[in-house]
Length: 473
Image (cartoon, rainbow, N blue to C red; front, top):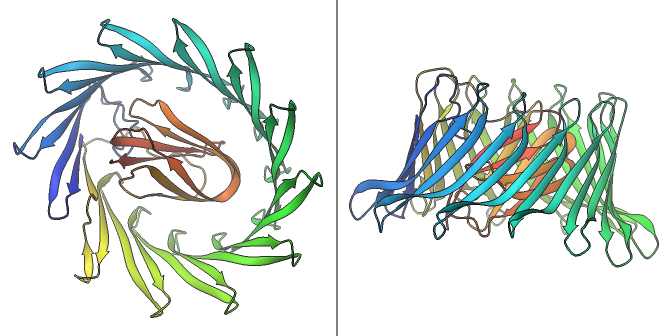
């Protein structure tokens, strides 16, 4: 099994990185589009254009317990100067019987002292239904673990997340200090009906309201309105901010999503934008059209769209974006992504193209990257995504540089957390978001080295979506 990465330099596709995996057990394996691959050893090679050959770059070793849970991951890097491997980092994982982490300890190799030095530790707790109740980050400082921050989660009797508290450790006071919290209320059918977020004001030592969302549903329990309010400290009251409305077809597919903003002067809602979706008979989303409101013509004007195709198994084959040219009243092609699959529905290639006006055709663009995946001939034991909800996740640009744009659609409004992880599963970025069915946010990648990372969106209740992406600076 292996991955080959090719990067376009404006003239040719060049070999970049190539990774292959070694397994000691047929119980392990999986989809190569996620860094959570249960390999025993991996070797990554970097292509040297001047030599026209691959050279060593990095290698990783993983160990597993009797239940096939990962317990250790060790990364070493190739040093060209001394032509030898050098230890880089180690992560120790402590899973429970259900393979949920109870803690993770990360270490870095200290060349000068020739020792492994602790760097960070994450500790997790769960309730009786195995929903996470605590995520605490500690860092190794002056020979001891020092608390940094923690997220605490509370659930109702039906395991709906009703409270999230974020706290930071105050070294001077030697105590936890409140940072922010959010509270959710659910209906008898487990639909979220309200969400309030607050922040802790250190100056006056009290909670201050920040935002509120109110959700309403139709008789089929489909979300039809979401009203977002902002807190007005001057009047100590909630004021209208945004309103989102949703429409569905007979099959329950969302076919329209509209956004309005409150005009305090006119005391009325003003149109901002809306999106229109179409589907095939299997419920796969074929098109996503976005339009913005034009006050001059008092109508919606096309902005951009995405067209998708799928195979008989529901795998997305292509997604093609286009931008509307209002001057000529026509669509101009923009970007296209093509994926191919094997008979096990595993991705075997991902190709990124851009429309060339000069060639009047699709073609590669500077720094675009193509991925090719190679598998052994056995049925995979793990999957890339685990989600009980139909969803569409888009990440761009690919490769990313300083920021990654995340767009996600799913059927149910739910609070979510977005995490960026490295190949060893270490959390590098962590963002909490208010409940929504349409997420559009930007994640900072500043300080991350070029390479492959994992974006994880956790919506709770088994709705975890994972997708790999690359960073190139």
